[in-house]
Image 1 (cartoon, rainbow, N blue to C red):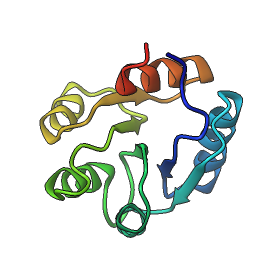
Image 2: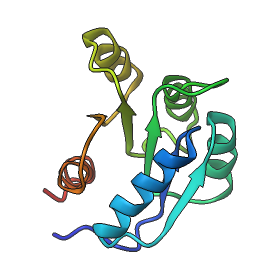
Image 3: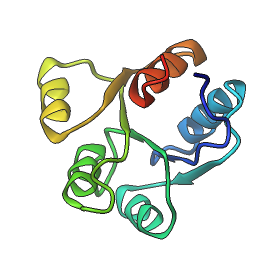
Length: 128
């Protein structure tokens, strides 16, 4: 089964350049239905307003981190089953463990390319 190019995806990062990079990688993978949020609280508002098929969030954001956002999503009955990929510049074991315990579906360490992103999305969505 191929990845659905119309899958609604929310990307969350407080760094505009990173939002643009992720959007461009998704475009390379033929995803066209991509929204952005610049922090965790904006992301939560969007998630409660529109139905998404995937969240790709940076870990290191202020004032709400990606981990805090993930915990909020998992605590919300309407959102708790939403596939969630965390992006981070650090590959510390304790970060990976914390994200796994909070219910992350997959984890990407920067820098990464379109192939890595595609593989992570496919594994999260069960299309691999």
